[in-house]
Image 1 (cartoon, rainbow over the protein chains, first blue to last red):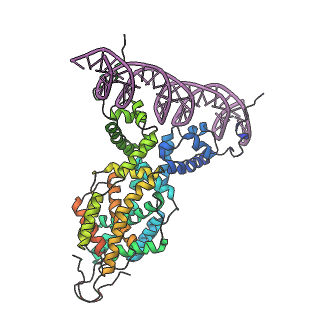
Image 2: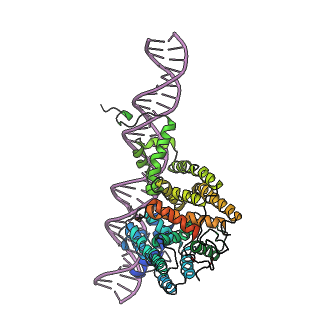
Image 3: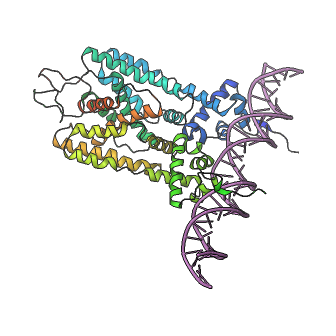
Length: 221
Length: 221
DNA sequence: TTCAAGTGAGTGAGCACTTACTTACTATGA
DNA sequence: TCATAGTAAGTAAGTGCTCACTCACTTGAA
């Protein structure tokens, strides 16, 4: 008496193209992997979140790892910011360059899954983790370091290791996101104030310069 | 004919006190949890690493989570640095205070498992994660912020949000450890040089102050 | 009629955890 | 000085369940 009913029973299990189905699986799986990590996520959950049977997941991705790899590959593309930074860098507008990078990096929630995936993949030691991180490293760290280098050559910045300086600045803002999004530390300042403070601190330092005209480069101690 | 041989067969499975066994289980499990996360580690592995049977693990810790919680609880004690920082803070030696914190935070490998446990527990959303992070937050961030506040009141530092400034500095050095230990980014500078650069950048800023006596507080536009 | 899209019902392996047992140490009374 | 009972430390061999993954099948559109 019982008849196989197939997807007719499940309202959302429409027949769609392989390409679209693959994309929807990636979307559903990405947020689960970001929330609970690779080991903490089951293929059953993924299938349920995507509104399909578990068997279909394996039709498109032969293993769970393949699906995970596809997500990392897809998420590892950041171009939006690059052009904007380049444009600002041409004008040698330090405040603007650093503020832009900090804003992009601090703004919470925008792609919270991204940060979590990045950390999870590195911690869990996934093989594609290096590629995943490497692409972002290139965009953010290397370009900022290049900018700092030219400004040092201009004589506008002090002669420091450009890559280390870039890491220091990105460290401030990445760490801020980490505190907020991963460790759930409540933040009392507005997003704009935080960015402004970090940029200001990084560019001009913490030590108060004497208001008078003597020994402008003095250090504490 | 076959006789139950018990731990006499396994050379390392000596009979030791409950207290010591509990401690050795915590040590063995901590490095496994740090390496592969809670979900990635099996109780069988833990037992093997500790040189005991799987059943014994459950004699001391009723569940896998209990064992994990015991590890977080035990690792959440950091006092060594606190007194040293307080002493240096009394002398108002800025370089020294910041260098000490940076050295402690950057030095790689010393307690690499700790950083990984901290991240894993936060990412995987373990309930004790907040307590775990909270204790360190108090030691590092709050004390550094308090120091910065007094130095601002002294007139030595510029008037910035002390907690935000503390986060900015710790962000630099934590991020550096993250890059090195989690993302395996090769570092070309020595540990001392890196610390010195970060402290210098944070205290005096990136922008070159004019060597002459005019407009000492100038900023790049 | 063909074929890709889709599924229910498995399957063996591995998981956290339990049970029923053995062994070694130690305190005590004769 | 011992036999021995009590007990804590320890284990082999499960148990039921969930996991990633498979198989045999159905459905709907061109």
